[in-house]
Length: 226
Ligand SMILES: Nc1ncnc2c1ncn2[C@@H]1O[C@H](COP(=O)(O)OP(=O)(O)OP(=O)(O)O)[C@@H](O)[C@H]1O
Ligand SMILES: [Mg+2]
Image 1 (tube, rainbow, N blue to C red):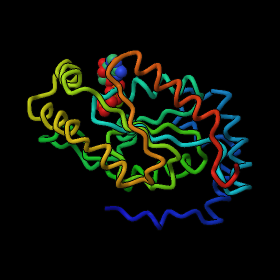
Image 2 (image 1 turned 30 degrees about the vertical axis):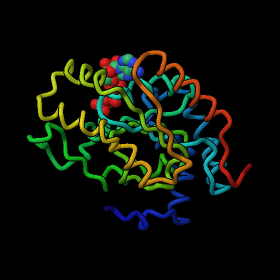
Image 3 (image 1 turned 90 degrees about the vertical axis):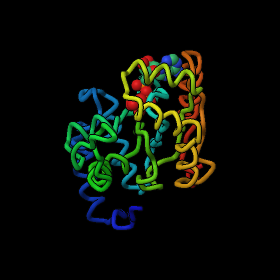
């Protein structure tokens, strides 16, 4: 279990934010479209946010067993909302935020501290969709909504088989889905009203989930501001 209290914002950090956000440097590392006018707008908005000490756009965490469709849905949701999609798996590879390759699990061993340090500033700004098959090591305060995607076991089995997963990896992931490991992890790590489980079996589910979350983003405001 990681303790995040040492990441509390200090006034020095806020001044640093102010500088970085104003010059739009921070988000460039995370938004795929570096030149997006949204990023500039977000930079300006974030300055206001920092003046108020509150973010103006929500952060969403999308989690779920591998293959449930996180990246597929996040990509569409980011287009619909103009929020910034942060794929943690890609970020870890790109910025070497890991402790090497695990042959048994057949994946990189993510370094939680490095990942959280890397993301702290952009998460403070708000306006991010974080995509990862785990959720217990992020600071709770980062997220306004935690979405857990769930897929029928047979459908998930087919998706993961198509990826060529070896037997042990395939059965581990199917068990993870059967026992709702990610949903339990999310409920243990975030307040219950932030956590929502959404079905992701077919294309219609993606459309419905994106529409639901887009509406939620449009109507979002921090509880203390409403
Ligand atoms: N709701 C859905 N309906 C039909 N196909 C889907 C759906 N969601 C995802 N898929 C398909 O399943 C596969 C896995 O999806 P995706 O890569 O988005 O999963 P993921 O949750 O991001 O996995 P990982 O955790 O390994 O990154 C892709 O081929 C995608 O096209
Ligand atoms: Mg993915």
